[in-house]
Length: 583
Ligand code: PEP
Ligand code: MG
Image (cartoon, rainbow, N blue to C red; front, side, top):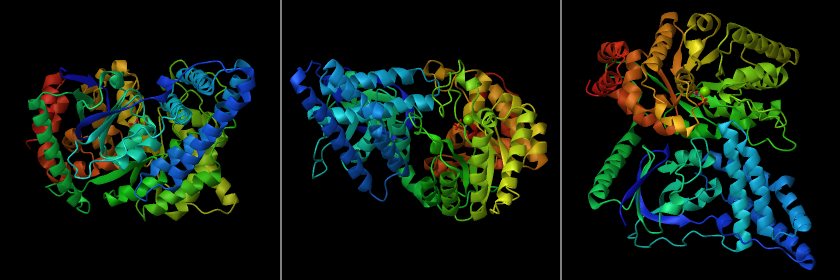
């Protein structure tokens, strides 16, 4: 067969080379038939039993999590268990069997399809991807019903001569990923999924090369095909020519050598050649991520995306996490960081009101009532979160980070609410850090263009380049149709970045970058040359960025970056950035 390549979304870095193993989706093989009246109750039992079996299976996986399993896994498995406890999933299909006499598989699929269609209407990418969690749970039940459970090959070659295996699937659940860990499994490719899908997040924390959102890879790739995953580019090469295979093997070996070397940098302070100290911080989603961040040498948490505590609760009977529950999570994080600062970002949810599914969906959710706008419109909910964060600040250094601010009055209202939360705690005689620093995410161009408003009112800034790029270039960051326009090196983006960093330096307030570019080693020198001294990123990137820092000389980078900032032509900018490597 001729070689071909597929392009998807890079979600986890590195190169994987192996033979394809296809994971068949049970949903695609389901039989549809009508059950005679006298067999309906038996069919209902068949489905209930399968659901109970999957429940038991999930509990078993949950209880047997190895100590080194990524922290997200337990939470994701819990989400699946919750889905499986939801009457929409467990009871409605039983009703369908009784009313329409569908066989169990068909009834289940009908309900899942119905739910999926509802999820497709949701504009918020994070929530839309939760549809996949429901599908994955459905898949597990279907596999039990069709007897195709455990479709993974059972043994790896004892002499280790068998080629390593790359999983190709329509979709993979986080719980399935855990099973893969124990086998010869070096990468995965899925048709579905995006940057925010749970599976992508788990892949990143497992550090396994992966590409998702590949469209119909599982239909195009055959069992045993040779496959290369270029996880940095999101490219999958199928049946590569020998010369290509050889090139990638060399690249892979080089990456492995580099990674080994990087491991030695964990305790090395991040100081440039000319003696400038740089703060390397971690972006985390859950308090359990702190241990890994510390292990990799993070000097603090630069972004705790608190919305993960609020997610997975939508659906019927959805509840917000209570003050107590939130407090416990924040406290856990700050205690785990052992005196290093933890920057907690207040709730950043989308415009589709995920906390109340009944409300209308906004037409342009990225421009809608999201993040701080949403919080200011729900002051009681916001106050609950602020109290929880403030209370945790009695246990270690916490900074409060507010997303999506653009207007002076939003800052003022936020500060007033923080003041109110403090007063409530004083009245309740609860301890907190009265001087907790409050900072703004700079992620709307309007904010970057009016920095004096922010600097006057706040203690620090953190540039959210993921959104800053989205809003500057007017491209939806989750729409793959415009993904090619997403460019951190667009001169407009560079200007806003440079302005923010230098305004912070002039006013002597700390400025961090916590968007994805902070972890991109190709941009480390550019950011250093702009004057950035705080980088916050996924912990897996920390050491590679540190290495760039150790090899950089700020004094030489600065004039070179000033020249780049004067350029407008893309070629000149790209060329300038490339040359920074030589300095
Ligand atoms: C950003 O926008 O760059 C950011 C860090 O926040 P998020 O990706 O969570 O929107
Ligand atoms: Mg953002």
